[in-house]
Image (tube, rainbow over all chains, first blue to last red; front, side, top):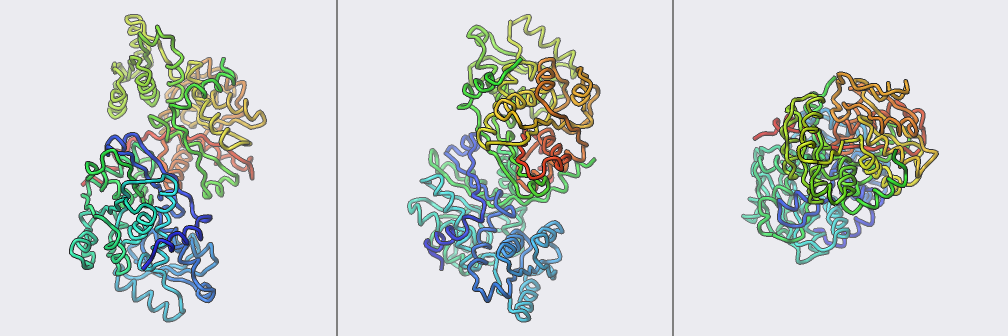
Amino acid sequence: MVSFPDVEAAFKRIKDSVVKTPVMTSTTIDALAGSRVFLKCENFQRVGAFKFRGALNAVTLLSDEEKKIGVITHSSGNHAQALALASKKQNVRCTVVMPSSSPAVKMEATKGYGAEIVVCEPTLASRESTAAALIEEHGYTLVHAYNNPNIVAGAGTAAYEFIKEVGSLDAMFAPVGGGGLLSGTSIATKGLLPQAKVIAGEPKGADDAYRSFTTGKIHPSMNPKTIADGLLTSLSELTFSIIQKYVDGIVTVSEEEIVNAMRLLWERMKIVVEPSGAVSLAALLQICDQFEGQRIGVILSGGNVDLNQFFSHYST
Amino acid sequence: MVSFPDVEAAFKRIKDSVVKTPVMTSTTIDALAGSRVFLKCENFQRVGAFKFRGALNAVTLLSDEEKKIGVITHSSGNHAQALALASKKQNVRCTVVMPSSSPAVKMEATKGYGAEIVVCEPTLASRESTAAALIEEHGYTLVHAYNNPNIVAGAGTAAYEFIKEVGSLDAMFAPVGGGGLLSGTSIATKGLLPQAKVIAGEPKGADDAYRSFTTGKIHPSMNPKTIADGLLTSLSELTFSIIQKYVDGIVTVSEEEIVNAMRLLWERMKIVVEPSGAVSLAALLQICDQFEGQRIGVILSGGNVDLNQFFSHYST
């Protein structure tokens, strides 16, 4: 389990090395939601996503012996880059197992932060067995993307920093995939604002957390289909237990709602937010009638979008 | 002519009604430029561009009689929306002559701020004659997009606010089209930091300001061709005279340099900046060897980009 003092300690530990991301507001979004909406822009975080917070907390907390040997993870997404950069900052060797289906741009970025990339087949079984074999051989410490209390506590520092800046909120919205951000957010929010509701947004096409939350047992994510490619993973025992305890509701949103929320952020607020990052705003907009006139926090989790196609129209 | 006290007065006049736009920094851009780069994000300004500053200053300074009758301008771009919103805030009737080639989305936005739209042929002659006929008929006051001292002073408040926040700079970069932003920026910068260089970026495909600056007489913009669609206009007598006095150099940049700078801002900084807005950064990157280790200010002028094509890939 992870408790509020763990989040508080993580914040003290990492605050000088993470970006204190801005909180933005928009008269357009306030008018649409009928409430006062504060947006915590983790798309401006190092590596473009909140993931750096947890990775840095986890690497910092390794023993000297563990740091000497190095860390490993398997990820096709933002956690790979986050762990690579966090390791680089602590002079720790980092190996990332990436499925062969990972975008070349993400592999390059991870390599750019100094990590060693090991390519595997694009299945969870291959990711796990490849990582296990390397742990067996080298003794690396596995830093899982979310099934790790130090990652959860680090992820919770976004909401902690957010509330310390804006003060009281009536509700806090965050997206849910594996549940690292949501569980950390819920601990931080209930710790600072016990009366505030914590609500997750989840794509309808990957609604395993919603089904798990509703039925009281973990449903794995089976053939998820959504543009929110950061939210394809299943809850872990750790994140599910926290979510059951602290989260008030999970709202599922359609692909169209995700795109509309993302477009609002790009067009009206001029910020680049990835589909997964806009799911929390999409959830608020769906149920905003319940929060009329209230003060709402929304975590925008990241901004890593493939812009090749967009910029190909500009090629000269 | 416009002087530094005019900019200072404009700032006091409008500061509570404009967005105090954030100044952002990026380790990636610092590394590329070899200097400490501060980016003034006017893409976060009301209506998505610095233009709101000048429009609000100009409308505020109208006489009661002029306010009662109303204002008019001709514009296909950001100035149209800026004047419409500034007029709405002051309860002033606003008419905008827009060429029939204007994007529907810009016409809608301008109408959304309460302006009356009059469509004309897509030529400068038609724009000017249509506006002149309406002025003759109704007595409206023309608020030109940049050939207006109150617009220039208002535009200068972006650099004024910027320098007041970040302190000393060795150089200030801004884009140049009609010269409103550049002339205002140069007055504010030389007023606060007499030693700082003021340098403009201009697209090679619309290099009339560069040719005017080099030859000492205004060259009109003839058949400009660039993706930086906010920089197609020619200097006016007013802006040219200020630029001759205060600007230290104009750097012309290729379309590829503009796209690369824009992409850097979107991908690494997660902010939506329009091509015209990225021209200042492109100029810095071209001549950054001259400023190694120095403190550089860069004005990102706006963020209004048509995202229809991008989001059509996401349509569901």
